Every structure is written in structure tokens, then in C-alpha cells.
Length: 368
Image (cartoon, rainbow, N blue to C red; front, side, top):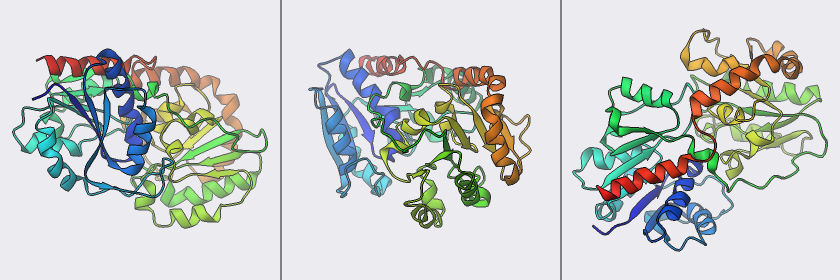
């Protein structure tokens, strides 16, 4: 096999910031190493081409079944079926020594096909509710995780210690964030509401529309309503509700754009309002007030899955929502130390060194 590395950009746009910084670090570490970026849609390809224009060793390639979409501004497109795409991509990847991915579906290839290719999987998402290892993850050569807590969890689940490597949080080094813009015409505090996409973890189905309406009716806040990118798949009422907010003052609605997943909104907010989305961990990289919504009545105290709820007040009833937002700035001092510890535990290194450590693992895989 020729010496080269392939990166798979086949899934949702939310995966891109977890993967692309490694491309840049690898190109810097070995400028002569051929790097192929396999893209599933024209939107993925447009972003990758723009960012890698000054990286001569990087080549953008269209995966079999590549879909041309009309919007190339970063909106999450309808994706081609991934398993057929992977099956058709297999002959190309079988001739590639190292393949890097950020999702588990691609790991069906090494799990079911005897390959000399070494697959390296980098985790996406963060926090105490993130998904743990599926058995097919163990078919990869290495799994890269942000923090030691994730490494310990995978090993406890049966993974081999030598396979799991802690790198720090790759997304913290993502440089292509949507440029800051003025979303609101006033200086009212900005609240970010990000309900989770899974019904058993989310505040949306029971409280979501009422949460939005109560924040807007209060009139003291600007609201960024940017739920998890996949919520629209599960909640058919979401888009009609969002369309009904168009033109109303004090609210910025985003269900699709790349700003939803590149860290733009977590950086812009003054207060976080949500349930169990891992976005809160990225938000807390710079500690600020949080309010959590226990819409499902979870018995959360002492449950590691809700550990992040130690970062702010937990609202048990809708009538408590606005008072909790009022109290949040004054109460934040009591939560700031927890937030800093939680981020360190959940994300590991956030200083920008994670992509370099990931690139070192890739180069090690090439040499062996």
C-alpha cells in the first residue's frame, strides 16, 4: 500500500470540528504525506476545499454516492446512505494504510472485513452522557478520547488499555468558527437554549415550546434557540414552531447552519439553558451561568449521567424557569469552581495540543 492517510467526512456536519484540526496537525507534522479527505456531499467538500487550499498534501475526494446539494454555506445536508457508501468505498480504503473517522458507523468495515488498513476513531461529544463504546469500536487500531475519564470508561467496558489513547479535546483547536456577528440590536443578556435530540434525555417534548415562549415574554433576554442538529429528525413539530418565531424580536433561531456545531453560539451566550446536551461542556470552557431543565422528573442527584447538572441550578417546574434565570448571575460564583473541574475532567487538555497528539498516533500507525 502507498503511504497515505484517509479521513472520512461522511456524517453530519457536527463531526467536522472534531476531525478537521487533526488534518491540519498531520499536514504540518509531515508535509510530504498524502492526505485524502473523503466527502459525502458537496457541502462537506466546499468547506474542506476552502480550509485546505493552502495545504498542498491534502486532496478532497468524492465518496461513492456523493450527493450534490444546493446550499454550500454549511447547512447540514441530507446525507447519502452511509453503509452502501462505505461498501463502495472499501476498495479505496483497503489500499490505504491508515483511515481516520469520527463516528462508529465507519468501523463496520474493520469489524466485518479482514483489512490491513488501520482505522483510528476519534470520539466526538463530551460529558457524562456521551455514548460509550460499541463492540465494533474495538475493531479499530486506536480510539482517541479527550480525557482520562473516557479512557477509563472504555476500558471498564472491555476495551484493551493499549488501544485507547487520551489526546485532549480536538474541537477546542478548531479555527474555522463562524465569524462573530451581531445577532441582536440591543445589549440584553443572551440565553442559549439547546435541547437534546433524544426524547429520554431532552426537555423539548414536554417543555420546549413553553420554555421559548416564557423567555421571550419576559422581555429581559435575547434568546438563541439552537437545539441539537438531530432534533429536527425526531420532532416533526420543531420546524413549524421555529418558522413561527421568524421576525419576532429578541430571538435568533438556527436549526441547520454550521454555526450550530462549530462553537459560535456557546461562545456568544451569557447564560446556558438546556438539559443534557454535551454543548454545555464546551460552553463551560469559559465558566458562565447555567440553568438546567429537569422536564422528565429525573432522579438525577448522584446519577453520573447527570453530573453536569452540578454546574448550575436545576429547574423542576416551568414556573421556576424565569426566577432561575434571574438568580443565575448572582449564583454563578458558587458553581464556577465545579465548572472548571468538570471541564478539565470531561475534556482534558483544551489548550490546543490535542490534534498534534492525534497526528502522532497516525504517524505511529504508518510506521508500524
